[in-house]
Length: 166
Image 1 (cartoon, helix red, strand yellow):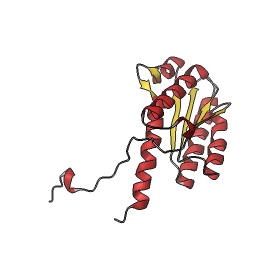
Image 2: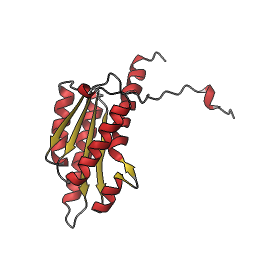
Image 3: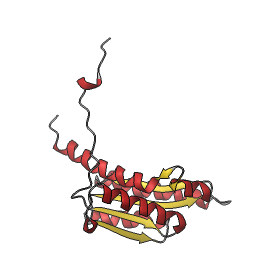
Image 4: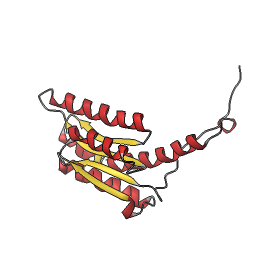
């Protein structure tokens, strides 16, 4: 049985530089206590990684349910190299959470798959508002910043794959 060492295997991964990338951020206004913090984290991460302010646009939608149609339209018109989705859906006592969270994830995932444009999912789905705040700059970090950097990395990785000969 052969043993492989990491330096013997071709490994590709994207870089974290947002310089020269056009990034669209689609953010939900619903639960804005959380989504404003996610947006701040995403913008900070993009600027720190070299994005020019004029290459970043923010589109605000009413809620997570409305997000997929806007993401699809951005992709259809090739407005961005990557799209970052930010929102917050907190589980309540009704099945509403399951429908909204599920359709949001399916919708934005389909856009990425169908268009090849990276769509980072920074839509929090939590049991409580406290959990959401913890993930929007609290003790669990800022998932908005993480989603933004995921989008940047995916742009570079996909460019490598498209340009690779083998």
